[in-house]
Image 1 (spheres, rainbow, N blue to C red):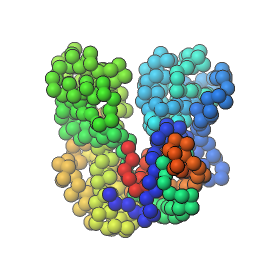
Image 2: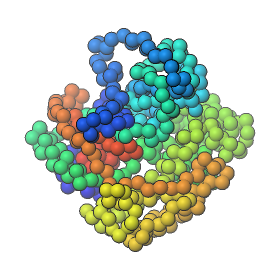
Image 3: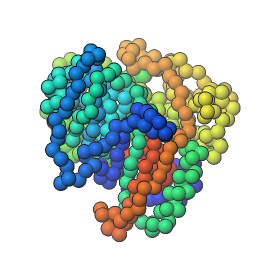
Length: 424
């Protein structure tokens, strides 16, 4: 695995506890002195014995007759899709009525803005689900994907063997080096975390291999998956008995059960069973495959050009600051000029895909025109806040760091460069 920074690896454990990873959505720049605005974690980072009872929410009159109520959603150890599903169920509305700007990590404490279309205010006020909290309601516009500046991260890394002075030396030098930028890889969360299947399914979908895509989603497992879920997947892979699998999959596997229920009612309708997945989730499969190709192109740049891989290498596609833009392949994409174009062609050829594949005729919402994304990530305001004895790993140290990333970028990409290991 290639790294741009030259600092000594700071071997550490990431996300040992969900409270070690705090993500606060920023929807106005916190980098500039004015206009600071973010969704701040307030409740779940307070020790249990110090917490005050929930205060009843007060919602102002909707004098301007706005259709959407905008709130802050703080969640703990829950992914965004599940949180939205729980919220929709609690409010008695469709998921489609709830808007959000971005997906947030599961194993974390996160705070983000959401919007609810024409909500039942009494249900909003009474809403209560363990690990979720709504607050700060204001009437406004629907929140759409991408309606944010970025995210502020407060992260604790644990199980560090180095002494305090060595830690300071490594982190300080690292903070200086990343000012020049690091490879802007998509993090493993984009690919399903430890299960690492979303990009595989995305490729199958654009190739219109729907049966294989659904079977992969239902049966592919990973070593650390819960034993009852793993067993259900393995048994289904052997028997292909959807009716039996409907009884064996645990209730927590809601999406799998929805797919299986469809296949029991409509045998071999694999294309139709995709409708059991939310539209945004279906699209994320394709985006995951685009991200996979993007990462492979950056890896090839680093392999061929080393430290100069993040500089312009003859390509014309750059942002206003001159940062090269990498390919997110789609049916309207074009190859870059020169050496970078040759890399793009090589990667797509190896993957046996072409731009036209991203026009999915049988399921048009999966189609993607394609775009480009900066290949360099510039973390902002990276700070080592403290070093302390690790209460959960005897004789080891822990550190707390903070930094800001613009939207669509991954904290694990920064941490990977720091600890010099892949992070799941």
